[in-house]
Length: 311
Image (tube, rainbow, N blue to C red; front, side, top):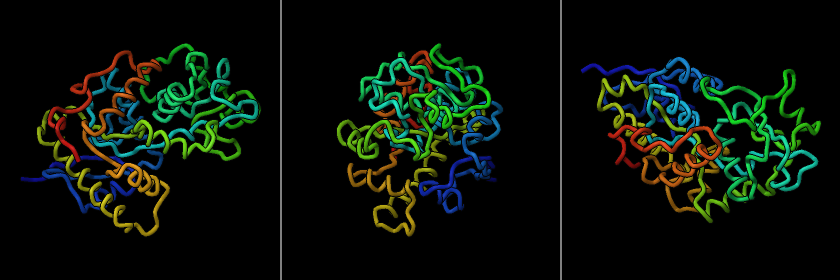
């Protein structure tokens, strides 16, 4: 039988390398990868126009999109994870997280951006910040155009930007500003993140993979085939990590290796079961932060054919 061609977008990094170079392919299908230099634009294009058959997507973008009836469904393939204690940078007048109460805090791009959701969750869970006592100032709009943020979300004034507002004192802090000109609100943020991993298993999921519902209905074997292809590409990468066989490791490679050293486990587990605590925690944050109205069931989020798959 002829292979079914699918258009696809995903980042190029270790766990996807064998897919991107064609060394691994999904059984019965072929992936024609399209390069989108600013990956978040692919998320927007998928949400708004269903431009691709298979697409990497930020997790809370997916939760929001699914809540608004977008016709695609995720595979439990969690391509990107992050440590978000360092995502919050502070201005000169702020020293502690609870000093954000009554203040304005910037958020890079939209309020529903996954890094922002995790960072706010960390502020609330670990540092006692009442998120409703903060005005969140977003620098862009949302990928899901139908979404309406809560009343304590505002927009950056026309002609300004988060870094300028932070430097001028118009913002107390900002999430997603990467300039080292501003210190992290949480001291020694990277070690604080690894400590949270040790203490409570906090290992945030950022991105997963979505597939058009029409294709999943037309090809019942598509979801398991894609899952296995992504999983095999990841296994090859993790094996190289274990053997210290990556010649010029990136920052992401080093993070994965340190997670492996701390947990003694695969730093990129795929499947619902090994990721259930982080899935549930992100959903809790999304409901608490009024990104979605209710917690969705796993059956709504992932195809039934993938529910028992683990890699």
